[in-house]
Length: 453
Image (cartoon, rainbow, N blue to C red; front, top):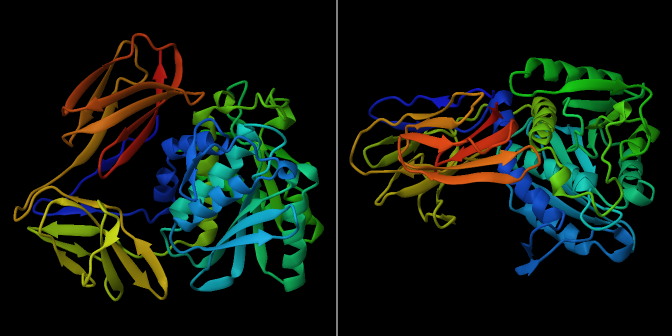
């Protein structure tokens, strides 16, 4: 079971901290966001691109996958601290690149990449899974200031010969880019036998073996959160977008599901490769492992964007910065609210942008529940028993939240509003197995694995 979220906030003030440690960033990976992006990018549900409601049913390069590329650009542009590039390298090929420049070591570059093109309709595992993972990691890390430069790369035309990645790797070598590691992810959501195994494909090129060792060490360090077992494949397959970087002498490897153990998606390269074949628990852990590596190599800053409320005054705890307060309810900046403190005139949700050395970190949205009143607030979520049989008890310290329970294939099984501090959910009709529970309130998202006996 994932660790129970426990945040204690002192009396007479209300304090909400943004993620700073690697573990915090691992915990920020949101399975509901991953599932939503998978559904949108594989064409299971409609989405909005350039203001139009559309369905991204097909990402085949030869058929024109501009709709998919435009979706990716809009997603990256919605995040902080990224410079987004539409790399049109040929009449048919577009790499979508987002760069987060490091503050202290900008010439040290780490890349996390996936191909976004496909061979037919849907193709959820190959490779909407890798694409959604890159977007989720970019969403979380882009809220932080980093020491090194992170490149979030989504390649085109992998399916016809690694064309997009080869174009980039060749150009990077010509420029003399100091690429210290390329984490390429391709098909990372299928676990047919439920053993939580995955492959790292590696070869003794540049520092690739050492990079593999780092990822294995991180898996051991964060095993309380990440339930995976690794298979090291050496010499690894050349059949994905890490290969062009090997060809140029860069450090790189492939991370994906356990093909080395013949546990490959039965719908590979067909239109039956759909969301129902994705094991969301396994997939979430895979994305968390990638986050652990990228957050470690990024060197996340120690800026403190936590907010304290005393009466009707909010104060951000980071000093020596410039500030801009934001109304989260309207997503609009508050004119003239550019000090470390802000006096609120109405209840609602507020955040602050904190800028140091040209990098902006945005705090979490802070819920002001009352004015001119000192109070304490303790956010505790407790689910028990786990494993559960017929009744799941949920204890909250907030007044209301929403509960969603998904099965391992990502199907929503339970969706209920929780309106009491003590809640009881009937689980007698659930089949035995592993589930995902997600509880959301204004200030927290709590994700836990749930086992039904």
